[in-house]
Image 1 (cartoon, helix red, strand yellow):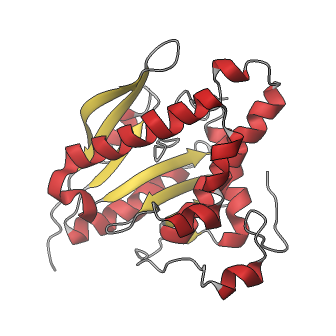
Image 2 (image 1 turned 90 degrees about the horizontal axis):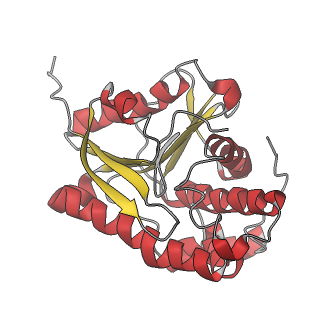
Length: 268
């Protein structure tokens, strides 16, 4: 979805923080307890980092999530489980806090099991799932705090998130890529902060991975939740292959499914 993107999506248009964690507590679980159970980030191969691009660490998850929260502040897909009729009585601040909280959990999970990259002082952030990885296991749910959404989301929010949104993303990706699903790169989110716009930051984060995908001969997959973004993604070789919809809101919420096929790299 993106300002990315989607496990939620890709948006370059921010719709319209930076916190440091001195000590890492995982949603209430002390770090030494996590170490006792071996709860550490999974090591995934990182494509060679171009100048200006770096990998986000666990200690920086809040800053990375803050960038995405700003980029997706008004995104209908990312806000889908938050802006529900049974939360109409909530203040805008309460909804914003939940929006940020969800993105903190998602960012943490991708640091643990995927790849999170940034440019500058969190001017842009990308969340990736590399080939052969997923974050569906119970330990990741516990470590990242994703389990808390079962208590933080409203009844309608849970129906939207667990019964509609997640199954739709899973089934659509598998149905689109078929046997290549496990071998693809998945751009889950890419977001640019207001101060990071117009600098080519998102381009750096995308090309960092697409260049590796070309070398490996594998596709790159994303869902775009912003109608302005497909033309931008086409500049990087993505093509829209289908469109899917979320149906539980007052109006259908649209997601463009895009795939980038690998470009043959001539050996020197």
